[in-house]
Picture 1: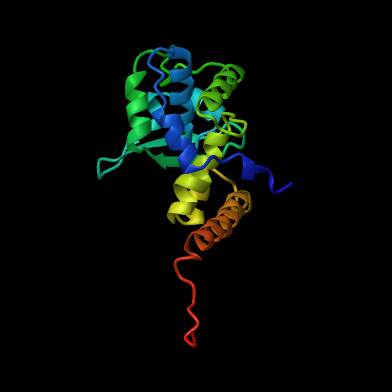
Picture 2 (picture 1 turned 90 degrees about the horizontal axis):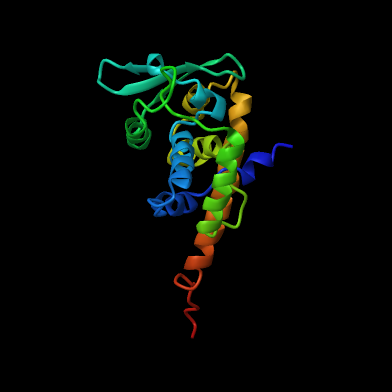
Length: 197
């Protein structure tokens, strides 16, 4: 059903925990986190990250670096401006992948196994899978920060807006959740006082 992605995107708070974890002594986990963060900040699916080569990086006239690729699943082109975190990750693994690939990807199963451990270390109450990265990019990084759905749709390489609207639905659910929390927080601070007393 349509509700499925709801559980997939992780909150910015959880993201902070994952990012802040000290994994310097656990190279396997560190690598899994880096690849996951790469997906979170580019919206690229596992397969499409595996396929990235130098050819997929283009510099725009304003100096911004972009990923230009075609989604393996649908054959749809997508263009994504590179933010600081993915740029750092590309830099960190520069020259380590065979056959001109940009990142030395592992199997998805192995990444998911390591992400499970990361979730446990962070005390996440949810299952963490690699594909959650793409969902998080769509709903938390883009839509909930006000990036228009048409733009998000193009960056995700969706063939039509309907696919992207699933993510927008999450944002709406999230908005009502967040305002409920807000109401909870302010209800005692802003109680209407009865003037008659």
